[in-house]
Image (tube, rainbow over all chains, first blue to last red; front, side, top):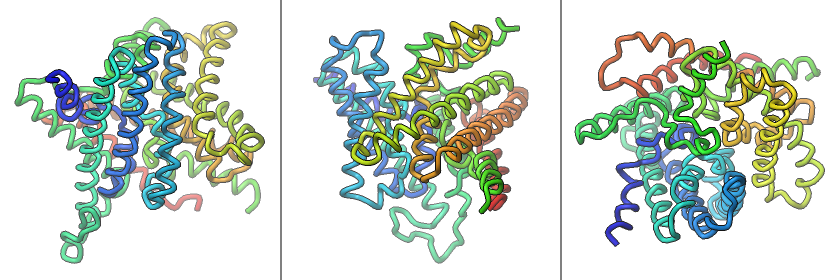
Length: 233
Length: 194
C-alpha cells in the first residue's frame, strides 16, 4: 500500500511531468492563457493517461516489443478520440479554447513516456496510480501557470476580477512571449526548491524521459546530434 | 483574391506572423532540445519540413475521400498512424537509396513521429478547409517557419553558452527566457500579409 501511495505522489511533486521531467511543453505553453483552460487540458490529459496506462499495462505481455510504439500510439489515439468527443459534447467552450491541442494530446510526450517507462513494465494498479499522479501533477502545473498568466494578463483569476478595473493588465502575458517567460520562471523556481532539498536541477530538456529514447537508443538528443555531426565531418 | 497573393499570404503567415513554434506553440520539444548548434538545427528542420509536406500530401486526400463523410471521428487515429508509417517508410527509403542523406537526417526521423508540429499541421490544414494545393504550400510554409525559428534560436543559444547568466536562471530557465525574447520579436511582424 505504501508503495502505491509513493507511486501516486511521485508524479505530483518529485517527478512533476512539466516542471521536473519537462514533458508536454507544447500544451503547457499554449493553453494556459486562462486558468480554466489549464484545468480543462489537465483533466482531459489525465483521463487519457489513466485509461491508456491501464490498457497498455494489461497488454504489456501481448504487444511485441518491436511494434510497441505504434501500438501504444494507437491505444492512446483511441482514448483521445473518446475524450475529444466527450469534451465537444459536454463543454463546448473548453473545446473551443483548447482547439487543436485537444487532438494533439495523442502526441503529448507525457502519455507516451509513461506508457514506455511505467505502464509497459508494471501491473495494472500501480500503472493507474502512476497515470493519476502524473495527471494531477500536470493539471496542477497547468492551473498554476494559467492563474499566473490570467492574473497578470487580464487581472482576473478563474474569471473573477482581482485587479481588473484598478490596474491596467499586462496583455503581453497572454501572448506567446509571456508563456515562455512564465514557464521559464516556474522552472527556475522549481529548480531553486529542488536545489534546497538537494535534488538534481533541470539543465536541459530531459532525454532520459523522452518517449522516443527507446527508438533512438541514445543518451541525449543533444549528444546524439553532436556526435552525428562530428562523424559526418 | 488571386492565386499569387493567396500563396504569398500563406507563405508569410506560416513563416512570420503565424510561426509554428513561436506563435502556435507546436514543436516546442525539438525547438528547445535540438537547437544548441545551428548545424543540427538546420538538419532537424529539413527533416521536419519534408515529413510535414509528405504527411499533408497523404492525409489530405485520405480525409477528403475516405474519412470526411462518415468516419470523421477516426481522424486523429488515422492521421497519427499515417504519419508514423510515413516516417518509417522515409527512413527505410533513405537508408537504402540515399545513405548520405540518411546519415545526416536519420537520427531525427524517429523523433518526428511524436512531434506535435507534424500532426498539428495536417489537422489544421483539414480544419481550415484549404484545398489540396494550398494545404501543401501551407505545410511547406510551416516547415520553413519552423526552420527560421530553429536557426535564429540556435544562434541565440550559441551566444548564451558563453554569457554570464545569474545562478538561478542557469540551464533551462534562461533558454526559455531567450525563447520569449525571440518570440517577442516575431510579434513585430503582426499584420504583414493581412
